[in-house]
Length: 293
Image: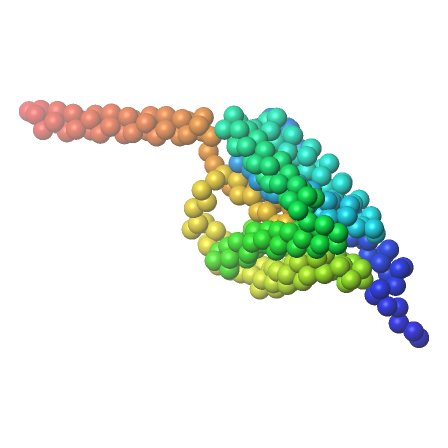
């Protein structure tokens, strides 16, 4: 039986379709997060940075795909990513506090407009011919490697806390599968800029799944988590794939509201006042008893 080459057109088409499907699944994963934002009319402890970075990555890869004669798969997946991430950012800005909104708008202008425009102008006017594809490809690949720093922080936290609560298995598995598909897609097209960053993605994804297997039944996990004091009431776990896909896994860490704090303080004060009055009554009774004939 003859083996089908990875460079076969049918294999390339299948990889392109699978890559697009799984990428859109990852794109749509934060929908529950934004449903909660819409429902509560507040962004709470969520941050816009993951979505701004994901949009920037999609914009870079879309520009790269447009330079290729056979870049349809990259164009489709990153066009969809740009639309979805833009919607996420718009919802975030609509319900964010003034400080968070201003910070998000500044980052949007600096990163997604300023830096992206500078890259486009540089590659369009200062680089010619095939070199334009190579330069933009290196920029895309370099940025993709950079965003893998996010999973490394999660890996460190899992090892430190001995808990996989911060690293859902489904998330790690999906992004590992995405890295495998896009690696073989890049290999099939002989596109090293697509293939190589996903090698790192596969390694990190595999590492996360191994850690999940080691610590999923850890007895010290609960104790370790309880001992950790998290600075925010919601921790955003962000993982970015090499093609702009982003996943944010929000972990709700209960933090008392101001009303709850006031209730606690008032109940504590009432309890203290009651104890003081009782103590005074006991002292008065003792003095009366001692002074009686």
